[in-house]
Every structure is written in C-alpha cells, then in structure tokens.
Image (cartoon, rainbow, N blue to C red; front, side, top):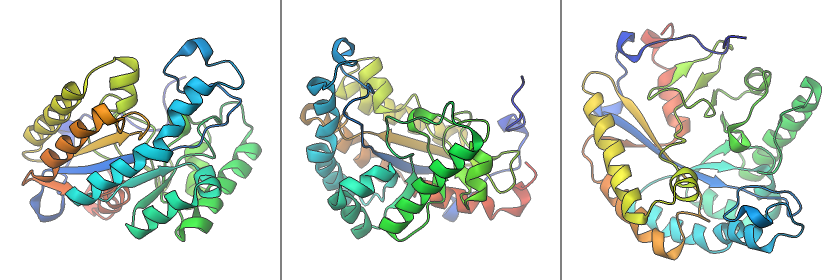
Length: 290
C-alpha cells in the first residue's frame, strides 16, 4: 500500500519557514535516556552474545550510559548552554530517579520514548497499543510534572495506529519519520513530524560504521554548514540524537564537547528543543496548509 500518513511536498515548493530572531537553523539535541530489559537482545557492540541471558558484555555496555556517560554529557550541556530534549523511556522514571531529577533541575523537554528500549509496538492490536501508550504517557507525566508533547518510538518503530492514538492522548508531534529538514503536517488531525536524524546519530556513526571521534566532529560541522547554506530563504532543523553509552565514552567525549562548542558559537543558530520547534511551526498560520 502507498503511504497515507503524509503527502509528498518538495521543499522548494513550500512557504518560507522563519525561526525566531531571523535564525537560520533550529538545533536540538536529542538525549536518548533508555532502559533495557536484561533478558532481551537489543543494541549491541558484539552480536555474538546478544542472544544470551544474561549478556554482561552488551548489557553492561549500555548501562554505562546512565551510570557514567550521562554525567559527562551534562557537564558539556551546561558549559555550552544547551537544554536537552530528553527522549525518555517511561521505565527511566521508574528506575532512575536521579536522572529525572537532573533533567527537572535543567528544565529539559520530555519526549516520550516508549516503556523501554526492548519493547516495540509491532504486533500490538489497537486496544493493546492504547493501553501501552496511555501507561507510557501517564508515567512520564507523573514523574516529570508535564505531559509529553512529542514521541520517538523505540528504534523509531510505530504501528499504523500510533500517530492517531498519540493525538488522542494530547501529543502533537512524532520524530520517527526521518524524511525532511523541516517539520511537516501529518494526515492525522493535530499531528506533525519534527526532523530527527538517523544519519547524524551516534548509533549509526559509531556502532554501524565504526567512525572516529574526529570524524564525528567533522560530520557535525558539515551537517550544520550545509543546512545553514540551504536556509537562505527558509529555515531548517538540525537534530543531534545521542546516546550516553556511545558518545560519552572517554575517548569520544571531547569530540562531542568540541562539536557542541562549534554549534553554540554559530550566529545563525536557534538553540532550542523539539517541543519548541513543534510549537513554533504549529503557530505559523501561513504554513498550516503546506
């Protein structure tokens, strides 16, 4: 079947998109805060043990992010004045109260990211998915004090019903469809897509392609410079999705810090969150039919 979720719209045919204060590129950092079930295979550094239970090699590698890597990340975010968009599993709220508190102290935007990163909605009936998503949203709201406005599926997964159910729960955007450099409306009332990058993403760059820290720094610079050049008449979005168990390993972290220093130093950048990008886009009446 053809894609009915959104219509085709070449970026050259759209009304101009203007960011606050005439900025060209809206930048947000997507901080993935993820809980993994110990008896299920997931993102792995070595596939040979991924199906074992327990799997100390891969589970421990992932667990490093919340125990150590995140705190390096926070130092850099604070230093460069960047407010994270926290892509948070509901089970983070249940098991890691210190993580939630440090985000509350910094007024992070809280984006729902499923119950955990070992559970996907594929195969759920609509009724099962409604119960699942209601629990995720309610749990995050109860621990953060604010209802999530956005959604990123674990491994960017959805069912055909996901956007509609999320809209019914009061959410207004998804990050799962990496199809554009600008937000766009979905064919679901009240729901839009906000850009998210699967290419400029530490999982892809390091785990899948085995690039180096200097490679990462150059890629971030190249991504920003091209988007800024593209944005002469109409703004663009740059997302930087990160996982503390990958980018905040000691030998990589300094390159993240240099990348954030570069981004924060650009005169045409709007340092923002995915929530604020979605709100700004929604409030632009001239683009409602785009």
